[in-house]
Structures are given as structure tokens and as C-alpha cells.
Length: 117
Image 1 (cartoon, rainbow, N blue to C red):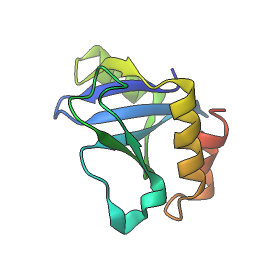
Image 2: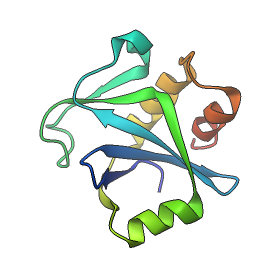
Image 3: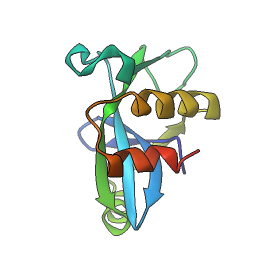
Image 4: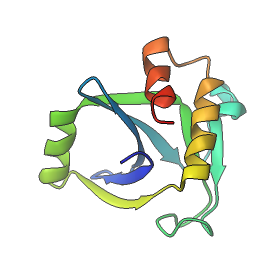
């Protein structure tokens, strides 16, 4: 599921990074970058490359959201989260590199990215 894009019930898109130790790691897709977190962690993706995007956006690799696998599956089953697309492997490689540069992720969070390769 690495690179799978999910849409939350409040219209936020998330990228499934990896499953690790019974937990799921996700990062957000935003319409604008968060420069305070460092532009090196804000990966620009083009709407022309991904059908699920309405406009160019940014994958925020400075923050990882962690949910238990059970909680994530329940969100999908009850319709709060729906699968809407995928990032290709080349783009996911860039996500991993951007996360590696993040000063905002701790060692445990970075392991989600390391193990997704």
C-alpha cells in the first residue's frame, strides 16, 4: 500500500507511507507548502502527473501521522477514509528523501520511511 492516497471525510488527502509494528504512517498533501518547516520537506507534485489532484500540491514530509492498523482499517470500512489514487515509485522515493532531511521527525517516525524502500 506504500504510496496509496486516501481522502479523509474533511477533504484532506493523505499518503500511506508504510505499516510498521502494527501501526500505519501517513503524511498530508497540502495545496500550499509550509515554509516554516523547511522547503526541503515540502515535495511539490503536479496535477498533470496525478489524476486525483485538482491543482499542483505539496506532500508535507515534515510530519508523520501514526494510527494503529485496526483504527485505519475501521476508518476505511466506515467511509471516513477512501482510497483515491497512488503516487508512483519515483515520487515515493522523493518523499523518502525529503523525510530524511526533516528535522521535525524523530527516529521512530523516520523508520516508517526507511522501511518503505
